[in-house]
Amino acid sequence: MNRLGAFLKEFIGIVIVAFLLAMILRTFVIEGRWIPSGSMLPTIQVGDRVMVNKFIYYFKMPERGDIVVFEPPEAINQQDDYIKRIIGLPGDKIEVKDGKVWVNDEPLDEPYIAEPSNYEYGPVKVPENALFVMGDNRNMSYDSHLWNGWLTMDHLKGKAFLIYWPISHFKVLD
Image (cartoon, rainbow, N blue to C red; front, side, top):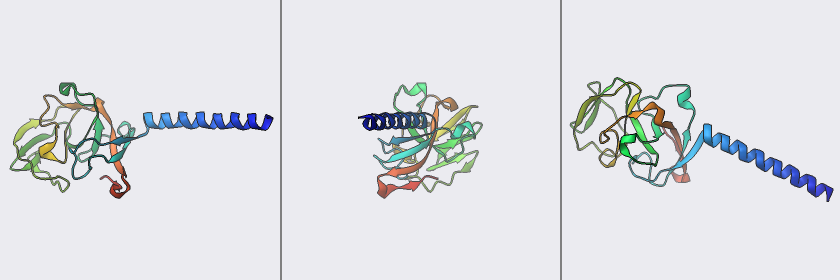
C-alpha cells in the first residue's frame, strides 16, 4: 500500500504542475482559437483553429499585415473576439476606392484578399494608439470601415501565426 500511496502522490503532483503550466501558458503566452466566420477567407477558413501569440506585442509594435485577435471596440457592442488583418497604423491615411485599399495615397498590394472591395471608404487618418483592421474577405467582413470607432492597442489579444487544425489546412501565417 505504501508504494501505491507514493505513486498516487507523485501522479497527483505531476497533474497539478501540468495543469498550472497549461493555465499560465494559455493566459500569458499562447492560445488556440477556433474561427467561427468567413471574414478572413481565403486565408483562414470557417472552422480552422489558429495559434495566437499573446505576448508578442509587449516586445514589438504591431505591423501592417499582421493577423490579430482582439476584443472589439466598445462601439460594436459585441462580446466575442474578432480576427482581422492590420491595414493601417497610427498616422496612416486610409482610403478604399476603385476596388483597392490605399494607404498614404499608395495602393496596397494584397494577394491574400478574396476579391476586390465593392465599396468606397474614406479617406480617414488613423489616430494615435489605434489601428485600422480589415478582413481578407473584404465584401463580407464587419471591420474598421463599418465601425463607428477605432480599434485601440489595448484591445489587442495577440497575433495569429499558425493554422494547426484541420491538418489539411496546416500553415504558418505571414
